[in-house]
Each structure stands twice: as structure tokens, then as C-alpha cells.
Image (cartoon, rainbow, N blue to C red; front, top):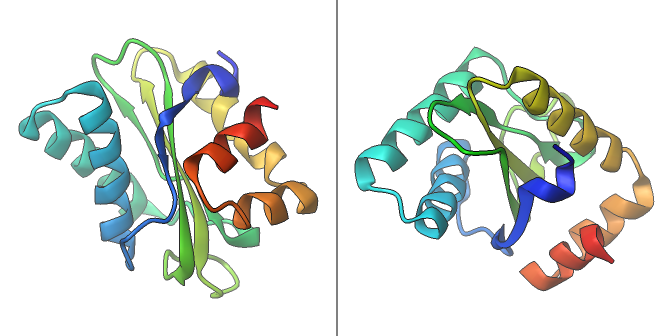
Length: 150
């Protein structure tokens, strides 16, 4: 599966309201759960999976991005939920500068290759300084979506 197949406009939020790591994870999982019509129990299960993975080691990277992720039983395909924060969030980034761009990757637990391909695609896209400047200057979810699809 290609990265673009995992992105949809209804799973992008600009700006994020959360100001800490757990809040960002909860906000992104809530966006996914609401878009997919999931129960509160299923939402909590996914949130716990993402938080557990994040507690093993931060998924924050250089350039102010983080890619929290989890393999989730019962998903039909991989999903990427994108959030942009106006202010840096302490998410464990290596330089300690805070993180503003979040890509939550939720992938079926029975397809680890797909999970890795999407993570690699995000890292590659975000290695472009121009792309990152454009992403950080996005004011709406439409701006973010158009960066990927136009």
C-alpha cells in the first residue's frame, strides 16, 4: 500500500489542541475513531496500543516530526492520521526542540510489510526541507491534504 492510499482528508487536523504527548495521541486516535464510527472501548484499545509503543521509545524524529504507530487487530487497511500543532509539543525529540508534525500510523497487525513501507514513505517525504516548510505553514486540513495530492 502506498502512503497516499492511507491518507484521507477527514483524518487531518490543523491545528491540534493538545499540548502534551498523551494529549496528542488521544486527539489523533479520537479523530480516527470518530471518522470510522468506533466505540469508546475500541478507541481506548487503540489509544493504549499507541501509548504502549510510544513508552518503549519515542517516535519523535529530527525536523520536528513524530510518527507514533501501532499494529491493530481487525483493521481493513493502514491509516495515517495527520496533526499539525501551532506550538512545539514535548514528544521526546532527539534535539529537545519539540514536535509540531504528527503522523499517527495504524496498520493491520497481519501485514507488517505495509506498516514499514508507510513509515519509510513518511520519513522520506519529511526529509525534504521544502516539504516540511510547506507542511508547517499549512493553516487548514485542505492545505495539508493538497500537499500530498497536488
